[in-house]
Amino acid sequence: MPEVRIPLASIKGRGAASSVAHRFAADARATFDDGWGTLDARESGPAAGGLRTTVTPTAVGKAISRNQSPDIHFDYGLNPYRGCEHGCVYCYARPTHSYLNLSPGLDFETRIFAKQDIAAALSRELQAASYVPSQIVIGSATDAYQPAERYWKITRSVIELLARCDHPLAIVTKGSGVERDIDLLAPMARRNLAAVYVTITTLDGTLARALEPRAAAPQRRLRTIRALADAGIPVGVSVAPQIPFINDDMEQVLEAAAQAGASCAFTTVLRLPWELNAVFQEWLELHYPQRAARVMARIRDMRGGRDYDADFSTRMKGQGIWAQLLAQRFAKACARLGLGRERRPLDLGLFRPGALSAQQSLF
Image 1: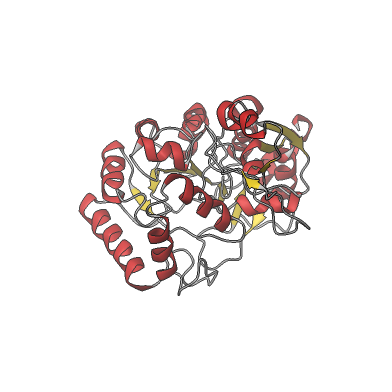
Image 2: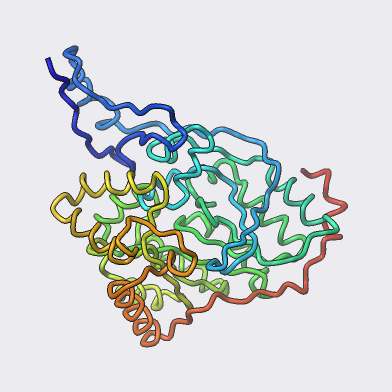
């Protein structure tokens, strides 16, 4: 008797629909009906009731990740968490869970690791004689204001440390939780030491719930931009990634963000490194089966006929007619709305590593 494969179904509150095997796995698994009520049980299982998120504290050796990619505008990144409960199906950080022997699919958004001692590690690194100050981007891979931050407050501890020694920082987030830390960020911003960039992929709430199911709603993120701007904190908007025939409201997002107080903007096109390719295509087949082939055809048009091309000169912006069209639309909208296209330069000259030496006992 042949096996009956169980079709995938979207899981409420999750971006991925399965535990896609990571690239180091020796084998892969697929669900099938074993004749013992598997299909019936599935109706009341994870697909219907959701999956529980677990957050595990973990120690870190280094706080700062050094960037040497020529197409990324910052040198230092810092991520208080590994994995991200926001569940953005397009997240380029998903493949990093493979190094933990976990799936870049469901594991990435349900098994979160909190770097509880990252502030102590950061303090040591900032005081090292070899340290050269440069803007630190918080949330460069995974969101520093995902739901776990409400309890762990790791991001806040990092900002407190950087504020103490006058070290510049930038934050990239989809989380409205950044508003909690306005009391720290506003005084830093007055000294040109802080900037925040809020990602808004689309204004379509239905699409956002499927693309990034546990991130703040688009309208809520616009309120966050307004709150930050009103507090005097420089705030920009990221309309990334652009996905052909999926989030086609770039101009509307930019206009709403500008009205809310954003002063600059940036964008990238969708990139699908490693296992993210399988996660995203699985999502496409579940949510947009009629246009899945069309979407992937346009993505390949922007990647020289491949699903992904890691070349530094094109990976963020793509190539070809479709990439040029997106770039032109973005440039014209920014010009019309008065949005800058350069990140705000922050002041590196105020950094005082000596301000940390007497505070080691706190960590």
